[in-house]
Image: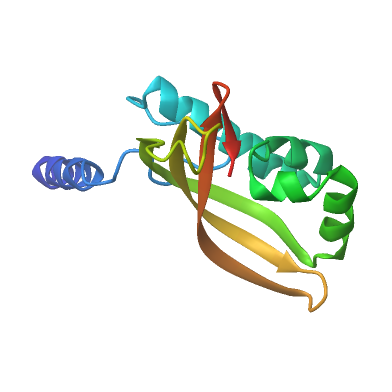
Length: 153
């Protein structure tokens, strides 16, 4: 019996070693051990944005959008509120799966204020108020760093 338990524990530990760093640490957890300071900053920015979406704290959502983004350049806060109010999509839950592709902006001509880019992969449960339908989706959000701070791109 003891051999079986030890064998099961050994197999479990081996399987857990194949789970990618950051995989599935979710909305309430912190980044995994070993995450870099920059990954923790990106995680905090992503959670701030997604928590605000879930809570429908629209001012916070708008403030999480990158100031240099085309959206912010073409939509002031009132326009954003109008557009958001008309959208039937609501994020109900999310789980951050991983942060990848952290890279320096190599096209300063096209994106002069952007220092870096990153991808944040998220599983979300969304709800459509117009059809009363729910769905689970996987989405990659782009986050950008400008002025030393990470924003949703």
